[in-house]
Image (cartoon, rainbow, N blue to C red; front, side, top):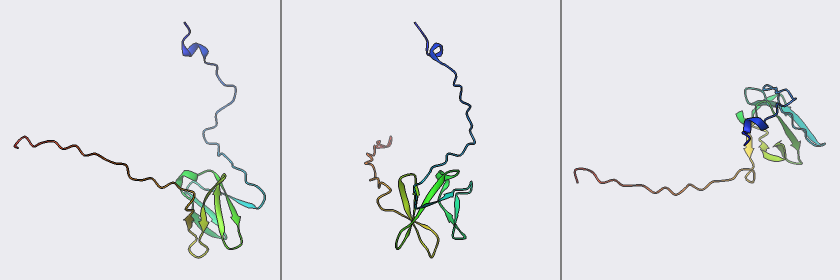
Length: 111
C-alpha cells in the first residue's frame, strides 16, 4: 500500500512569498496599487481601502455622477468626493443575521 508521501512530486515552479498579485481591469478603469499601509492615492488624496487589499490593485471607474472602486469584479463602493472615503455598496456585502444562541442554565449548588 502506498503512502501519500510516495505520491508527492516537488514542483518545478519557485514560490515567491512576497510577490504581489496584480489584477487587471478592462478599458475605462484606472488602476491603483494599495500600499502596505492600506491606502491608495486618488486625485492627490489618500483614500483608505483596507488591510485585506494590501499589495493588490484596485480599479477605479468614473461614472456620470460618481466614482466607483472595484476589486476584481466586485464593487467595493463609491468614493465620496468631499471626504475621500469609500461609501460601501449595499449590494457588495452580505448582512449576516445574528445567530440564535441558546443559553444553558446551571442550577446553583446552594439552590
